Image (cartoon, rainbow, N blue to C red; front, side, top):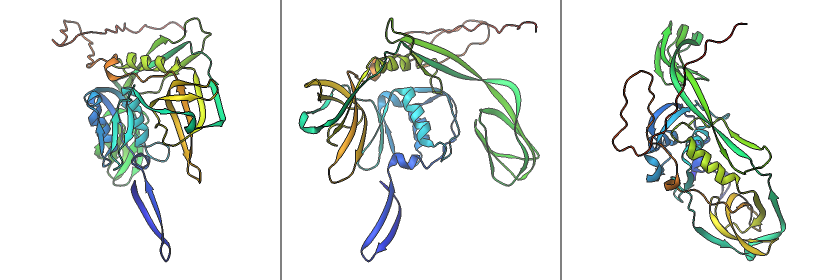
Length: 347
């Protein structure tokens, strides 16, 4: 933990207030930005800042495309932008005992066995969800446009921070000077005037995958994952299919040592009186005289591994006529053809 404050409350008593590494991220802002192939390792380290983080080799060189917003507590924080990166990669966030964060894969092997002696079966319940018919994942792409937008109009003091709800580029100040800027923000000098820039065109496309054949329509949609792009949308959809095919969740109190969240374990099913394979989806531990962890265990789910991913390493946007030659090492290509816009209709 990271110590935040110490207060003496008696002759030999002190109150300590400390945050975990993730808790520290929840107190920090992050400027976000437009990503056009930056590696996941670099983006993660920029989000974590001074909080030490290790990124597994399977993920650190993956290129990210898309956008992250400017986040400021309390409405959002660096933790939220890190969660977007993890979702795009299919990675998990762990932490060492010394407070170092770890971005790594979930292991698909058995971590432990949760036997009947580690379960408080009296409060067990089993939740079975309706079949999901399909998943729909939205791909995102930001392309520089030509429309001019006004980002600030008024009087500013020295060092005024202006944030944008939508990204912009080619910032120009009239009556104020841009001291520092990014796709989502600008720091401007004192003065009265305007700050203008050019907007990005936000292009989207939906990727759909069937989860349960012949099921009644019950679609799970993922629309606001801003780092899902043409390079990784198929992989994200594949992971969602794997997850939503598993419909049974055991909800029961367990011993706190019985497997961390994300672990694949052998678990005693209190109602079926047999061991089943589960992945610990959630665990909430209450500290009292008797330690218990409220556990949600997803029956039958196994995390996909990085070597099973359907991921493209490069993205190339072609807008002119001519010939394009793919890199010599390319093994597969995915081509998305987008026709010209229509002229509209009368009325």
